[in-house]
Amino acid sequence: MDVDDFYQLLVDRGILTLLNDPDDDPNELILAHLRISLQDIKEGRVKPTSELWDGIDA
Image 1 (spheres, one colour):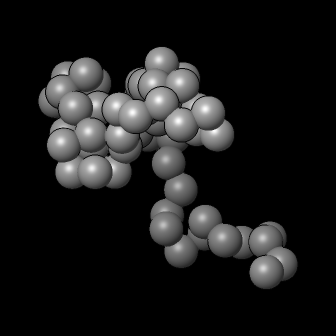
Image 2 (spheres, rainbow, N blue to C red):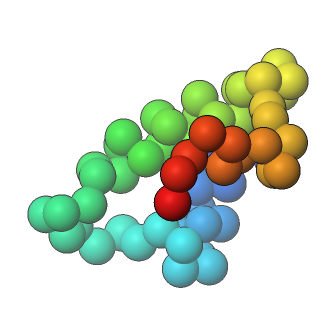
């Protein structure tokens, strides 16, 4: 899936919005982070979900 299509899917599902809230990151920054994340996934730079909270004292 193309990154722009993925971004639009997130918008369509209400996960991201196109509204400009001054407290939100700009859409361009969100899209850049999505591109980086998808590249990490493609290259296998991922962690198992079970390890995501390791070392966090909450």
